[in-house]
Image (cartoon, rainbow, N blue to C red; front, top):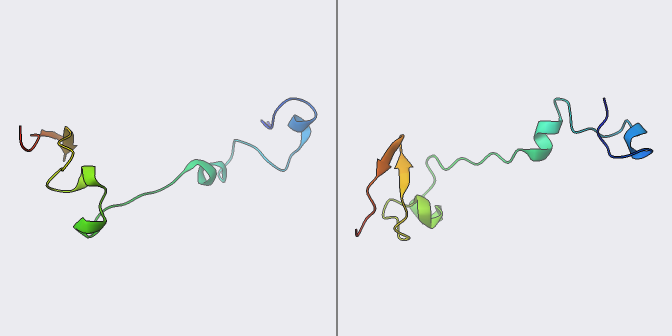
Amino acid sequence: MVHGGPFPASSDGRSSSLGTLAVERFLRPVCNQDRPEALLPPLLRPDNPWHRARRIDGVLAPQPGR
């Protein structure tokens, strides 16, 4: 099965949205574990300067300053 678009593009077997390599085209792994606090996005910093609600270890964390 090739999902490249309407004919004749669909007969082009060089690309497909399916298969094991398709994941690599859409996946952008990001890990913030052990990243220095200064390099974290503001929402992920411990002081939460944007005062946004967030979950930490599955628990809704209180918003600082509120």
